[in-house]
Length: 160
Image (cartoon, rainbow, N blue to C red; front, side, top):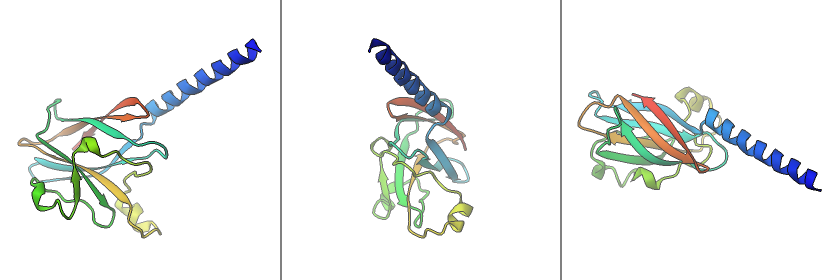
């Protein structure tokens, strides 16, 4: 009986370590298209969750050399409407769901698709899309995201 218990515990620990290793090698956060103004002071990045289980919670956003941006918002839209690139959100808050990024979890299976894949898709119903919108007084060259998934912390750097 003790031998079976040891084997079961060993298998469970091995399974747990394998799942963590798989998640670290295949992080769930994906990004799609990047929209920017000519001076790169306003950037919007399409984000999504390629996992089929669990939501992603973005916990921190920094730009360039770990600077904290002044204005960060998360746009929640659908694939038919798209995103709005703007530095003043007051004008578009009624037409677009614009919130603080900490309050919006990225739902499972919301990976952004390429425009060719969307055009070839037979499904015509709109899907939920997420866009991280950042406005800064200087040019934005890179975005570093820190996020949680199943209690694990991940980092992703996106070059603009």
